[in-house]
Image (cartoon, rainbow, N blue to C red; front, side, top):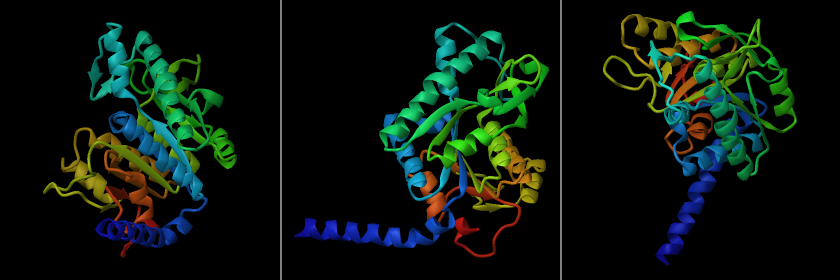
Length: 299
């Protein structure tokens, strides 16, 4: 009898959760949501499967998810196996000709197809492409000192619209093509996701990472932040290290037309769904104006 009561309570909780999610499901119907899936957030096969289910659920309820992924740990592993030494300047990988070939192989091949397969296993339809396909992401060298590290300067996102309007989830490897000699460029995953979200005028950009969000001077996670606060906190040194490129990406995406950006912990179960479809939300949301009242995800 006790087990039956527990089962009924679980069912009631599920029904209540679905009922409370209705306004959010209505709010995000037809919305474009770009999700950056980081190499560290990928975790094991179970984490990958959970992420894929979340993405398929978004598509099932009328959201248009666009996945952009990283793959740093996998690239490091392969470079190590091949005896190619990795060097970093200001947190970015120095990418010579040999390294960029490995980067493209791992990102466009192993990692990209693993995510595509996980989405298909979860019942979705997905197609994996890179930023080189259909000149999606045309780049120029970010810094001569970094070699083949690219900065997107021209975005051609119609191929992504064609895919998601056909019911297919695009999965994008952050590898771009050069403007002059069709070079291959390694593009930071966050940078690529921000450029794609901006070009699509996405409703939301979710940066899944391995930290709970942007912290204030006292170490508390800030749930709502404006671009002005980001700039001030960066100037004061409150935002530092690896959080700087993420917040810079957020500002760039918002300036280009993305409605809001959330930096959140990708290791939290169902992180994307929590941010989009619950009152509580998760992580730090950056938008040009902070809504005065919650729920956060409705704004």
